Amino acid sequence: MIRTNHPLEEKMTLFWHNHFATAISKVKSVYLMYNQNQFLRSNALGNFKDILMGITIDPAMQIWLDLAGSNKANPNENYAREVMEVFSTGRGPYTQTDVTEGAKAFSGYIMNRTTGAVTFDAARHDNTVKTFLGNMGNFGPEDIINILVARPETAANLSTELFSYFAYANPSAETVSNLSSIYFRNGYSIKAIVEAILTSPEFLSANAYLGKVKSPVEFVATAARSLGATVNLWQKPSKFGEEEQTMNDMGQIGCLAFDTQKGNTTSLEAALGARNLHGRGCFPHFAQSCFTWNEITSFYSDMGGAQSYLDVRRYPQSNPWLHILVVRALLA
Image (cartoon, rainbow, N blue to C red; front, side, top):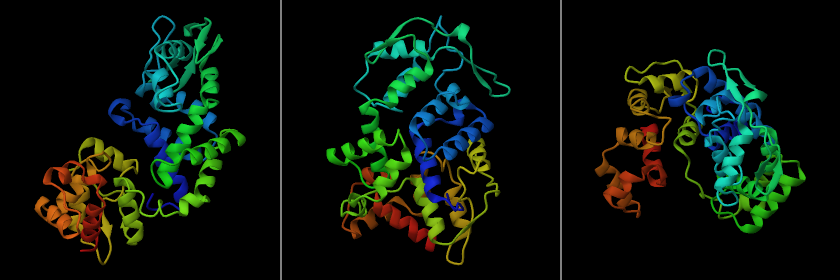
């Protein structure tokens, strides 16, 4: 995200990584996580049907949601539930029966844990008639994906999520409806939705101005690019844990060392390498390594945004004033 010549592609890769959340903690393979990241990058603005089918057979996802090894005798329901609740329709249109029937439809995948190759074994697949979201048939994985991408809830869910990612949260019903229509008119094209968002009046409206608080990853990447900092992806901080080091080697963290005339490289390395930069807890650790909590709460008070000590400590990653503190650290 810092070095790329294609920032929109990288921003969308991060979007999909958050949308199809997996982690090396369970996958336990840098190679599979890297390949998944490359799949998301190459399909960043692609067709949602292709993206959803591709992530279904992705080896890292097969491990993450226990799809590999699911068979007709014991169909695993994890993926069948998540593919609806998180990846497509969102909560609402499905029942437990749809989860059970969907799990049967997704049964039959096997995976070679040595090579990461995923294959579909028809002999292990449930070959019975299933009822799924009001449709009946001898469904397999592609049939379920076809049903899900054609649902109006999927269009609305994706439109809302993408608009919130680029502009601001809680778009109007009219905005979501317009983007959903674009989704269907363009054959489930993500590129068409993103283009419509970025060229819409809403994107340039007062609501969009300062309407988002950057995630820790986006904040650090933006800061590094804005400051013209150079990043050494190969530096090995001595206190980095095994998981953090693996993520660094994959290029998922970066930002481990800054080389800029204005930046304090030593203290910044300590701040960024303190702990778990890629996790949700990274921003508090980063800020805490730069300032004491008394300094943080005092700064809030000075800026007219005084909050309790506990509020600042509990939700620091969502507080814009704390971002200003971090910028001050970068420029110190």
